Length: 400
Figure 1: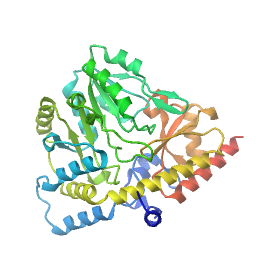
Figure 2 (figure 1 turned 45 degrees about the vertical axis):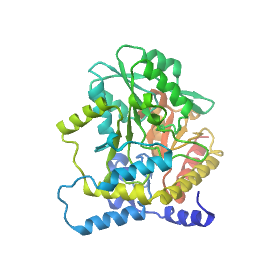
Figure 3 (figure 1 turned 90 degrees about the vertical axis):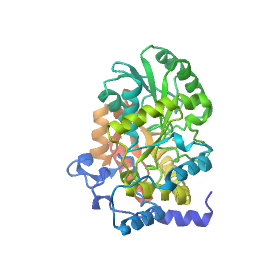
């Protein structure tokens, strides 16, 4: 918990406007914004507009100053740093032998699809959900089984009856879990995850849990690592973790795959070796170790700033008719409901870009259940968010 003085200092850090176009950032690149998109509110790509923590920058500079960038092993302290972080931050005790390095979380998702489901087998997703889940299933020639979330009084919930029905199909082998959930912002409770885990366990469905947003959880809510609930769940699951979102280092870090089941872990190790996805990057190692050992206070400041941005967004939307916030419990992504404006999905995309000058992720990218919604990244400066909301307010007012 930050003191008032620390909060003021943190706000100054995160209020700094940094021109993302000085580097080929995806968020502001023409491949995302299109030609003539320089003045758009770039809120589509899920990274922060905040400079990485000072300890990370210092660690990268020290590694650069060494001047030799040959092949390297994993630093001795890296896995210990991760283990300590998970224990102290989330109460999850992980065995070092259960941790594998991987290039990124999508790589691990793809490996799970190819290793533990045959072509034509079912992989279950709970839409609307992270769009790359769909690509991984499709590109590995597995069958997508959607068990949509239920939106009830502005809050998304699991459809347990639907999950039981789908999981019981003989060809259902894997469930891709998003915990916390992208894009709807739910931080699943222990009870919810337990009910989901019991269904999967009974039906021999492996839970592959993408927990990249684990550290971005708002006050009053608690992230529960799925594998931490019980030894049985741990044995029937694969957990994907990365500091990419927590410390805004997506382009200079890798990820971790945590597998307690020896047979599943061995299969991953063999496949990693076969496709040579088991090499180490010196800068990624330096950045991740610094993040996990020294950057907790920076993350606390970022969380405080994000919650202030969320409060500001919530307040401003009260006066914008036809736009509703689905209250997030975590992540820095806001799921906005524009259905009351009466647009088709394509019309909504055009309205937001042409009239409000917003570049967001279209809701339909997360599944048909996302039509009429949009995912908006609020990990930006307050001044950027204020300008964006003023534009949206004016654009909606012109409709009326």
